[in-house]
Each structure stands twice: as C-alpha cells, then as structure tokens.
Image (cartoon, rainbow over all chains, first blue to last red):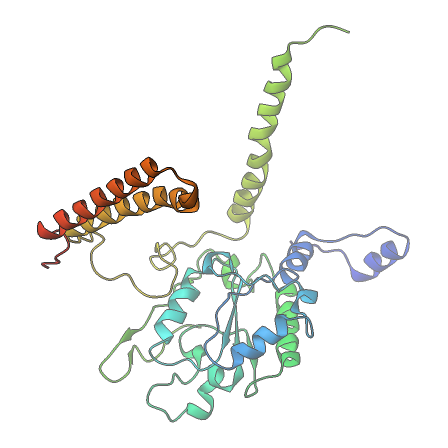
Length: 198
Length: 125
C-alpha cells in the first residue's frame, strides 16, 4: 500500500513502543520468510542444494526448507545444474505451472550460461533464454554458502516489491503476461531458440 | 438458567465449521481480486505436473486374457492362504484331517491342470 508515513515519525513511534507497518511490508515480510522451493535438481549443483538444506548449512533458518514436489505449491525454482536441450521444455513447463508470485534462481555456471558445456550441441546456453531469472549464483558448483547468499538476495528483492503503482512486479500487474511458451524439440535445436520476454 | 436444547450446541458447531474455512478462502480471494490477479493458462491448468507433455489417448486398452491370469492367481493365492494353518498344525492332525487336506490339494492341482489344458495359461497376443 502507498503508506505515506515518513520514516522519522515511524522511528519515533517505534521508540515509544508503538509499531506501525504497512500491509505491503508485512505481506512481503511473510512471503520472503516462507519461500518454498521446488524439489528438483538437474545435475551436480543439486547435491550442493541438498547440502544446503541439511543440518550443517540449514536452509530452514531462512524459512525455505519446505521443498515441494509439486509446482503448484512452490514459490521458487532453483535451476540447479546443467539444463540440456532435452530437459529445457520440461523446466519451462514446470515453471509455467507454478503459481504466481514465483521466482527463479539460476544456480551454477551451467544454469547461467551453459558453463563448461557451453560449446556442447545438447546444452542450453542459460535457462534465462526461456524463463526470467531473479538471482544468478555463479560457481561450479556454488558452495552452500553461496546458495544461502542467493536466497538472502532473493528475500531482499521480494521485500522491496510493490503491490501497487507503475513499478509493481509481474504478479501484481493485471495486464502483464506470465505465459512463457514451452519450446518444442526441433531437428537440430529447440524451437524457438529463446523466448521473447522482458 | 433456562434449559437449552442439546441440538443448540450442534447448530453452533455447524455454523463455526462452515464459517471457519470460509474466512481464509474469502480473504485469499479478496486479496487476489485487489492485488494479485489470477493468471490461468493452458500449461498452468494442465492436469499433470511432471513436466512432460501428455501424449496419446486417455483410453488405454489391454488384453482381456489378463483377467484369466488374474483370476487364477487370485484363486490359488487365497487357497494357499488356507494351507498355512494346516501346515502349522500338520504334525498334530488326525489321519482324517490329513486325508482331507490332500484331497483339497488334489482338487487344486486338478483345477490347475484343467486350466492349463484349456489354454488359460497360454498368452496368445
């Protein structure tokens, strides 16, 4: 909500024990602390992702440990690993089946750009050719700390999203399309070779 | 204090049971109307969520011979179950019971042989 209370007054009230907040802030706070990732891994980065959820790194501290096996219940798609051209339509279809608001983390060099397999005939040169990526985590594979940092970056991004106004994100925009066409298998490459989205 | 009907409680509970789930549903729907619109799509509304597009027909046909196999298996399965208590108490059984058991098993093998000769165990695509 467009809460036009200035920060100074809010601080003063807070010092006197009166906490004031906006609907937008508390909505984003709740959302950012309960990111449910989708439970799927594509290659070796998934092992690091699994390690992140386990006791040593404990993704549960950020409220993101509830991995869902169904795209309908997930908020976050962690593209962890090499996306082959055979796998890309499946990833895009699963992304389309997630409910808005949804976010994507491209984890590792392969998901970002194809990584060491970039020159391969069967590897997609970055999942961002087909779906919008919110956070890129470089590394081959990234350490669990890097994934934690990526989740925290995503939380920061979620907390700053607006509910109303011209710069509101896609999921709050009635006109913005959230349809990302699923590519088909062609004789040599996927058709189309990338999605036109902004 | 007036005597209230015992069904009054039930009606109150019924009201609570109806309203309690309706409130979060109404809140969620109201929120989506106000801020985050629903955006259905063909892919999103697809039935399966495994990532692979559905292929072929939903009407799957398979051979009716399968049922003969299934029924024979079921019959022998249940009859094998009857033999377990007999096997447990076999050494203590009187001679009449042992003879009755062997007659029962003879009938079983007879049935199996009959089904075999009738061709029920032959899979002719």
